[in-house]
Every structure is written in structure tokens, then in C-alpha cells.
Length: 380
Image (tube, rainbow, N blue to C red; front, side, top):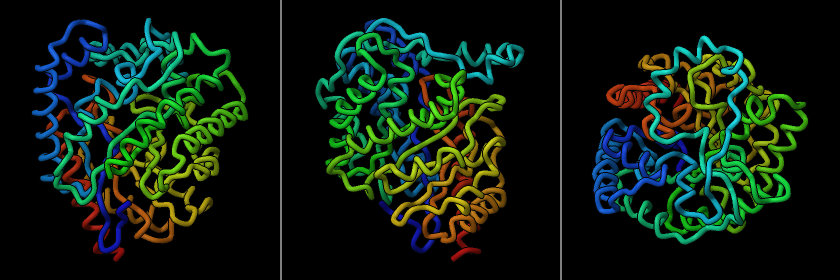
């Protein structure tokens, strides 16, 4: 894993805007409607080339394919794994349930969604990784990418278990572990291709106000421990320095008044066998939590990708704001070489779900680069 040796490196959390035509195709495929494979592949190729070029132009050091080949950050697995069918009934976030007037304001957003994350396929049989053909095709999209390092995302067993309902296994623990064994195939494949593996695990924070909203904090922390142990098992044989773990509280504008505190989960996150954490620290609910890294120092050998760009609104952060955030994080961590500038989450986590206008995504990433340069001048 590259780290900020001479300057603060920049990256992002994974998904980037998909063109409308591609989003429509992903939506149809997700619903089981017929889609011309040739047309889908051509749209993916074109969109991926465009987002790679746009990232490079914006000054991103550690980039990816923008997840153009996927319908969403976790439901893509229904096409790569056995055992999924029907539809789940995902629990709504507690903070949204408490504010129906806010939900009413969000109706236009819901109407844009092409792939439902609340009605994803459920586990109705044994889950297993079918083959690596789609993973291979996706990894091939970034061959020759102009980044200093290229990463590829993969879902956490926890977010799949939480959002893709268990109707097959005797217990949730059994389901999570089965998913871990299946996902180990994808993790290994990405690592063996020489790509930096990012595991997307919003469940390690977000499930506190969804699946565990009515249960004690201790039950949720048991869940965190289960998922992290499952991830560690799935990463067996993969160097921690080749893996980063993305954790967030849900990539949506909303009150977030029931979010678990980072202080409560950070010690458990440090038990993950990864070389870096990717953590939201730009949004208004969690910007103060950079202080946690002074109270809970990063373990030796672990870096921090600090979210300093909010992915849920259309304000373009001023480079001075980005620099200030990075300087605060560096002070709390104690070493600017151990931080990388990033975004809170992805910009299009499910096809059509992005909250930021595509043109402003690139403005935000340019501001990320400019702010990282300012911070570099002050810290190095």
C-alpha cells in the first residue's frame, strides 16, 4: 500500500457517477429483466475509461474503475454467487423512521433509484462464489490505469448479511461465515491481480441504527466482532498491507442522530488484518471524531484514509477547508505520513442513487487534490 511519503496522497471510497444509460441497464439486470450483454459490456467499457481519465485529471493518486461494472456496492454479488433470489425486506434506518417529514422531502431521490438496496435479493440457498469471470472482466478494466496505485472494492460479509436477508441458514452467524468463505474467493482474486483490495463494510457502523436499533450496544459490538473475525478469516494468506477497510454510517443525507460513536467501535476495527482504515470525517455528524485517533492511536503498520470530502451534498469544499481537516487529522494521528486524503463514501453507491451532480463530483475531487497540496506544504 502506498503511503504519503513526500506529500499527502489522494484517493476516494469507490463508486463514481454512472452515465444514465448504464444505470438503466444495471437496473434492468438487477430486476432480472433481459439485457443485451454486448451492450452492457460496451457501456461499462466506455464509462470506465471516462472515469479513469477524469480521476487522473483531478489529481487522484490511488484510483479505481468507479465501480462502473457493478449495479451497487454489494448487490452485484447476486450475479457472482449462488443462493440468492426473491427479495429482502431491509430495515429502514432509525433516524429516518423518526422523521417522516424528511422522508417526504426525499421522494424525488427515491424515484431516481435504479437498483433497490432495501429490496435486494435474499439468501434462499447455500451461498458460494460461482466463478471469477465477472471479477476478472472488472479487474481487466483497470489494466494500465495511470494511477500511482489502483484499488478494487469488494463487499463485506456483514453488509451482505444485513441487507440480503437470510432465509436459508439456521443462524445469522452461520450465514455471515458462509458469506466470508465465499467472498474469500473474490478477495484473493483481487489481491492476486496486484490490486489494492478495499473491503466495504458500512455494517460495522451503520447497523447500529438499522438491524440493531432496538438492541443493546453490546449486541451490536458482538456483531462487529463476528464480522471482523470473518473478514480476517477470509483474508488468510493476503498481506494486510494490501488491504484497506472502509467503514461508514450510511451514505445518505439525514439526521444521523442514532449513529454509533467512533470511540465505541474503533478498538474493534483495529483488530482487522488490514493496512488502512477508510473513515468518514467530513460530514457534519462525524467531523469531530478525528479526535478519536488521539485517544485510540493507530496500531503500528496501519494508515488512515481520512474522509475530508462529503459525498452527500453539492457544496464544493474549499481547499483551505480540506487542508484544515487534514492538518487536524495529522495532529491527532501524530504523523502526516500515515494519512491519505479521501472521501467519506462513494458518489454513486447504487446505480442512480448519487446525491452529488456528476460535474460537481469532479470539482470536489479537484478540491481534494488542492487541499492535500496545501496541507502538504504545511506538514512536510
